[in-house]
Length: 409
Image (cartoon, rainbow, N blue to C red):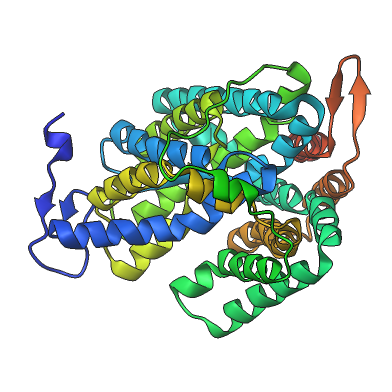
């Protein structure tokens, strides 16, 4: 264990490897950059789903440190809130309350951890067979676009603040470069928040009453089969995100990390399970922090330990969490218009990068059908179980792709 927390001091060169570190003051500085990079996205999920932001931050910090332990400090990564949980948490909370949603998060984590153990034993070839880019791109796209209705409703609740927020996001993205551009959505929400505050549309009573320092608010999950079903497609997205993250880190560090793929999936599963068990949102490896590594050329896992510890310390301020929880609905609507659309377009990016052939009628029919089912939320009920649009669309994408290709052969 002692060697796990021993990093070689970087002796020169442009790139700082995962098992190296800079001086501790500089390492702390890089760690703070990682906190800033994950901050906007990690807080957006609990704000949008009405979950306690401080609790989610606490478990993201704990999850990050668990991830580093399980991957033996070989995969530099921060575990932040996954946007794939937005739709199922909202749907489960509407029918069974937040406890039912947390039960879905726990089950998602358990399944992901089991997948990690299987990958450790058998490799990732079966994942690549089950989730080719045409399928993963479709699932990611429909998860984003399925939330269009939520963005519309939030924007309608505060149209002026929503328009200010959306305009601010666009302007910041247009005129900024580097890190500022990466957090344009978070900064847009801040501007919308300030505008609503000036207009008298923010209830500050809870902010005033909140303590400066206290433990986060923890919640216990309940397990409802009907709610749990909503979360199954999220497992597929988390698998794709983790595999993509490990491959990206391997590419930029020049190290073969295939042997850590199972550990990464298992670690994210454990972190997500723990978060759901205590009241936080599910986690995933963060592309935002890959951006920090690419910009700084510092891939040291020591910086991620600083980020994880820093996140836990920040989570101990209820006052801070109350400020975030008071975010105006209109600002969330404006941000949602941009954010949910961007999530959807990430699916298109997967298609483009993989050069998916849409002249192939099977690819075309499967993707087109799945998207319409997911976006319009075509659902059906059998007994006590309701299968919503994302579930049905994911089944069409995965099973339909393989079945039609088998028939063609």
